[in-house]
Length: 308
Ligand code: BDR
Ligand code: CA
Image: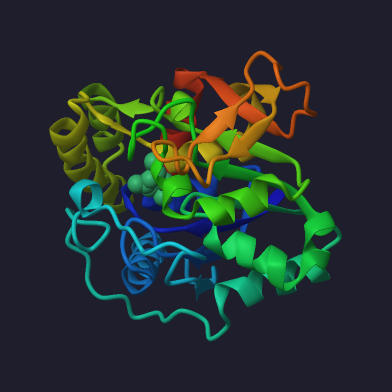
């Protein structure tokens, strides 16, 4: 099993990523850390706790992280995720609390104590990961791999930038220049993981309390994706990063040089991918390319069935 720290901002698709991480056969979910992104960090933390509670994940610690990007004003996504960050399902207030330790401290502590066998899976803005790298650079060679959801060769927040990178591009720049092996699971890939009505039906047929929760998430999420982007379903972005850690054959990657734009007038937060190698610079990122959709949905459904 691969040890994973899941850094997230739940978030409908973040919630599904948590549910998959907890039951994927090759993943050991060590901890969940939260960050401001889809909503303020107070809200994303409560949402993470709610997901743990409905899923019975009482052993997985949840640590609250950064409430603000490194340099930028905070930006949230109520148009996509609602005001709570996870609108739709009605869940009770969680009884479990976050651990005392700050997310950045938890990440540093686990990495320093490890044999280099921890994979970080950030599926929100990269603030916590960048802060951890700056606070304790000795963690950098200890990270086995970072499999992140973010970026793309196009944008969903501006024409050039994807949300997670746009929210804290300075943090993304630190992470992309860190030298750690990186897999970028961007929109190019995650838009292939579209929860169409047929997929939602397939999940509904599992018929346990967690699959019902997922259906409620997807109903809300599909609605906002239809209104904002005109899509016929919602892409389950964040679960794709976990799916890759569980089974890398679920998608193909291409190794390219990727740099983060932090200055452009129109392109702040863009992941600039050197597709044709025109810069001659050493590639630093495995860029996710083609998703095996059947494999992905089967993996997710198999995980959800285990909650029965
Ligand atoms: C990313 O932004 C968030 O809204 C989602 O949770 C996902 O991590 C997609 O751009
Ligand atoms: Ca997210």
